[in-house]
Length: 254
Image 1 (cartoon, rainbow, N blue to C red):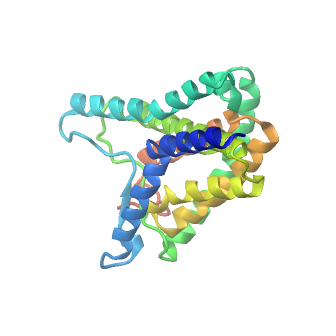
Image 2: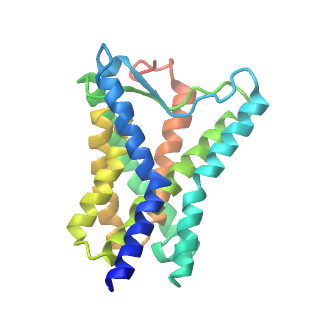
């Protein structure tokens, strides 16, 4: 690759990350710094994932929720555009399409069962050890749109993260000449860092998940199963918390 093309590709990658998960990583690092320097242990603090944007005004709240979900997907649209301009076939180049729905959903469910169960056990252990904040998956009001919004939020998270931090980022790092091991480390550490707002446990657990997801992507050449797995994990976490928080003793709340 010519030096000028390499510089342009590097700049493009940095800009995409700056508009999406790279910015989230910086935000999470600042949040973590605030948490560890605040009096009291990490487990005495909480990280709220889906909260009301307009308390007491459900229709305005719904508008804000949908606005947030929609605008969060703009970087994915940008990635799709860049891949089309590259003549790579759009998001199909990273395996995010409808060509193999049974494969994507089937393997996604299997991965979610293993990773989700292991992740929950790790979170509970990290919180008990004082390495993690109490993660509050949702604190939305009890209105008719609560569950649909939680599902949409879970799907949005999965699409943004897997398309950008796995499919797009690995493609660009490969083109820039990174070794597979270095690309795996970069993608996994980025995933861990933008979850650092949850605490050290959130960083470690998600970095390990990142390693698993990169290896699976290398094997399958598709982010479809990873998007499905991530969506299943988040849907169970968000909706499950909404249904069972305060009703089962093992589930930490604020």
